[in-house]
Image 1 (cartoon, helix red, strand yellow):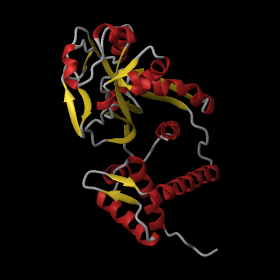
Image 2 (image 1 turned 135 degrees about the vertical axis):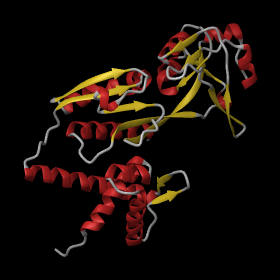
Image 3 (image 1 turned 90 degrees about the horizontal axis):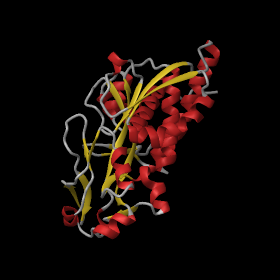
Image 4 (image 1 turned 60 degrees about the vertical axis):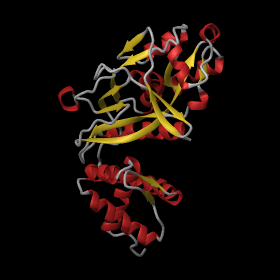
Length: 306
């Protein structure tokens, strides 16, 4: 069989997959221990070989082309098979084991990750999972965490940040509250309503509400008689019991919206979102249990985004 792939090409494919997963040449370079320029050159060689663009590039971001997306799926599968074959021959640990320490925000933890943990444990029964639920920024080294999920990526060059999803925001209230106080029709109407507040634990600042207004992104400072701090789910509970309007993530209140116990308002101004990001320390050596968890969650993420 003639040789079709040299070491340089295989390395370029690995860097391409990293860039696709992390959404950044800089992050891919950090994870691989090379410069962003080296990642860019490697992907340029791949594109020249294939005669096709793999990424659409802007000054701020990259995203896969349609052809690049198909190429990534095939390459990722091939690389995974190579790793598994190497482990089988070399006698390396083939089954993830040990304790995995993860930190999750309460919202994403309760509604996205915790419901998946029984399936993960059935798949990897030798992995013990130690879960911290909270919204503060943790210290990976001092506290011994392997992975965290946060709404905003921390500005820490020692961490790999992988996008999970842009979670859509909605403003909700109970039918009883709306019957009593009226349904807001414009953003100015928020000033006449009781808007449940959430206070950021890191700064003590009340979070602004995000809207699209005739193609323009707007942040609105609302006001109300109830304020929650640390746990966003407290605001959801208040809204479900008629305390006022609350802006939250759609995935948290999907069942209540379907049942009618909560109603979405200001839909003409909807469409904004906040990004959830998966964070873990950079470095070439990654415990098998951590790789298994990341692959498991990213596979689920593709289902959420489909």
